[in-house]
Image (cartoon, rainbow, N blue to C red; front, side, top):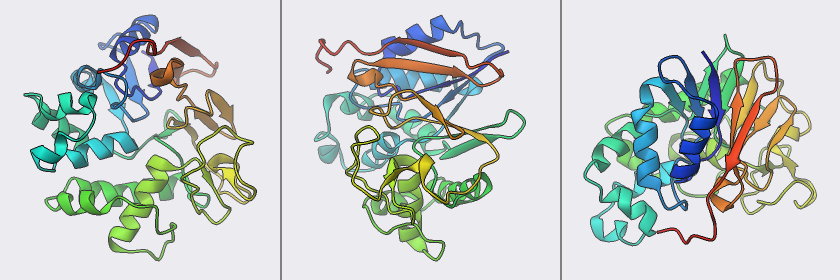
Length: 278
């Protein structure tokens, strides 16, 4: 048995198939962890979603910002859904869209396996969050996302404010938690997220740090695997393994084996950017 974490797919179906072949994935014995952002930009989001959905008994998926956006758009009127790109429209108007979107809405924001020694999140953790705190905050939002009033959460989750604080409540609290888990790259020591800073470390404004290097950050008892930050590339340090290597931009799609003391990484070429996506 092997456990593999896989970086952002973003609708890159063919690279995903190649990667599963390269790691010799056997659904009878192996497990997959997907770091979120299954959809958007790659041109084959519908095929990618169907593939991961078919593997749901053998995999764990955490929600990324693009996944949450798709779920939210799925609750809008058809005329509004037709305004999104063609790749997402193929999902929204597919015959099995309800099944796929309902499954996505039940996915977690965080997954932790203390026996294995790993936590998976799409983007990152707030500076003062321990892994236990992260699980607690994730459960808060997941409960509402899975509840009967999930439409209200989806309508109110957009926005860059407020900064996370334990004193927050209501939709402000939900939005701040979602932003940390799905949009974080750089932040201040107090946890203010710099949403416009998307480049590689060294390009950010003074006073901002990659989330895993913030001075005074909490100590964490689990190794963390994450995606979201394609310009960071493959990064391993501070107990963090970032594996979004830009498959959708013509980079690579990366898998990291979690159930071994050896550092085992497998990569395949990403999407052919010379081919225009649908």
